[in-house]
Length: 72
Image 1 (cartoon, rainbow, N blue to C red):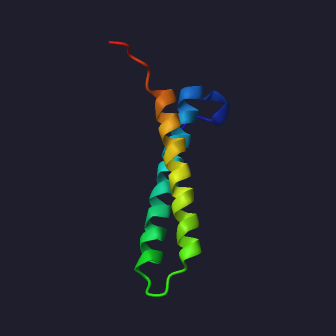
Image 2: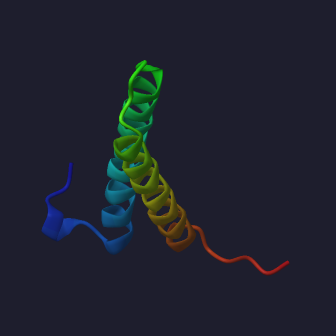
C-alpha cells in the first residue's frame, strides 16, 4: 500500500470509504445484537441507529465525490 504522502486525494477518499463501510457494518451488527436482547436498552439502541444513519450519510457524500457527474 502507498504511504499516505504518496496517495492521491482520490485514494485517500477510497480508504476512508472502506473504513466507513466497515464501521457501518459493525454498527449494524451491534444494533442487531442489542435488538435481539430481551431487556435491551432503548436509549443505546436509538443512539446506535442515529450513528449508523450519520455514517450512511457520510458514505453517500464520499461516493458522490468519487463518482463523476455525467450529464446525459
